[in-house]
Figure: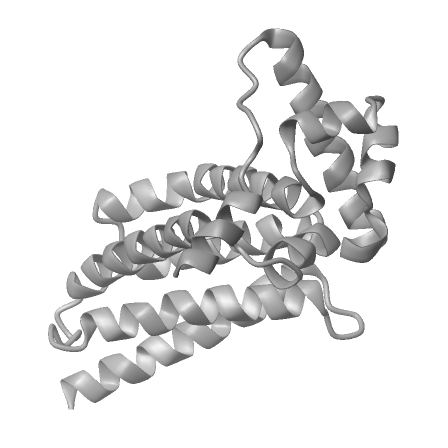
Length: 217
């Protein structure tokens, strides 16, 4: 546990940018890093390249980030914030009681768009670095919120078994996330974000129809 905490500290920013000039420097570093991770992947996006692309000295970069993994973690936080913003309208619709089937296509589309904006960067964020507990907790909280809202939407359908609603919701949420991640980052030949979203939506709808039939039998 102590080693894990020590490793997590290595992924934390060295200091928080409070002044406008410092905030602009950090933003330039993050923008440059996002571009280089997308273009060259994890191995090719060195701190020297990032500093050069951002127009800052390597010393200035290290004032704020101890290594490139810490930059990746900061980008992950930003990605989660953007993801929550993209999903917020759909979560609000579920919270208002709209049927899950009506919201499903837009949830899938938002998830696909999130992954498709910069797939190489997304791969670097979630496959090529170890995320600290703080970020893992954020991801789990987002997943829990989606599962709970999905379960509540499913329970509005009288054919949904209340005992199974949260398990079904968890299967749906994890299936959307897993399929989106896999298919957008490693798309089959000829696949587009639109066709991927359509197929995922079709699959989830078929599963939910089957579960409704099971619960009504």
